[in-house]
Image 1 (cartoon, rainbow, N blue to C red):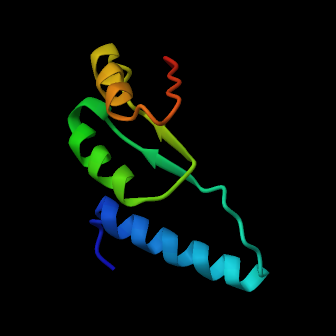
Image 2: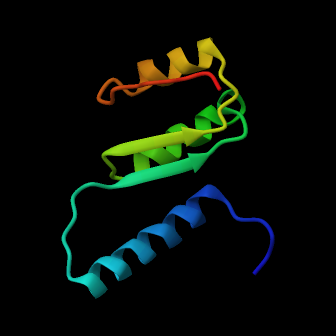
Image 3: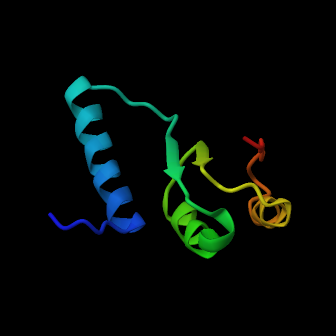
Length: 89
């Protein structure tokens, strides 16, 4: 396995593993949570938009966004169907 993993392949592997775990436990769960560690939301905003649109989930947690108010507002305007909470830290 190479050292480079793009976000799309990571998500595909996560979905496959999630389905496998769900099948093994014989559980049907409708609550899906995606945790993305983003080194800079401003730098990767367009990639995040594309990725989030391909994943059906209830909760998205972005970690390591380097809080930039303008970028948070852009993200919030794009996803009006989500409640957006942000915190500096």
